Amino acid sequence: MSGHSKWSSIKHKKGAADAKRGKLFTKLAKAITIAAREGGGDPEGNPSLATAIQKAKAQSMPKANIDRAIDRGTGEGADAEVVERIQFEGYGPGGAAILVEALTDNRNRTSAEVRHAFTKHGGNLGEPGSVAWMFETHGVVVVDGEANSEDDLMGAIDAGASDVLEEDGKLRVLAEPSDLTAVRQAIEADGIEIESAGLEVIPKNTVEVEESEAGTLIKLLDAIEDQEDVNEVHANFDIPEEVLERIAG
Image (tube, rainbow, N blue to C red):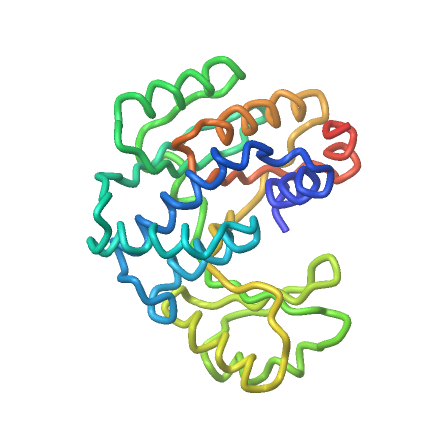
């Protein structure tokens, strides 16, 4: 699990995630709308949409809200809006690479807000392509590592899974995005309960960040994530979990 994933998990456990439910639902709805517009309204054949819906359900977003967001994306909704996906790339304190995905109806506003966050908290916004090559998008299916073993997942391997990683008591089954649905179905067919399944942006390598710079880096990431138009933030830092716990308070 990358340092950024650990930080997100710690924030969630401590209740420090975005507590403004209306703002959170707006972000989740945008992600669903864009995914439906780009890949269709059927989550079975659209891994990005399935991931967005899963995240919305995890935050107890009402089904009616989810359905309206899908309709906006497929053009069936009466309140369709023009939202586009844009990406920002840069570096934070300690040399951590940062990849930002935003969903916005105003490119200039979002660009200014993200640039301000980078500048205020010791980061540097880079040119397109400057850090994106350091990350890869994978389909990831997570199952209980105590109730299952890697041998139980041979069906997933046969269905196209590329790797199985054991992290924090979980087994994370990796696959190409196009193989995610087949891998998930193979795991379900073997009677294995799935905890989550979706697309994840994973760093190819991580950068160790000293404790003296860790706090500033985390403040930068939190400031970026707090922007209303920002949907996802990915970073390749490696900070010991005990340091992240201290930062979280």
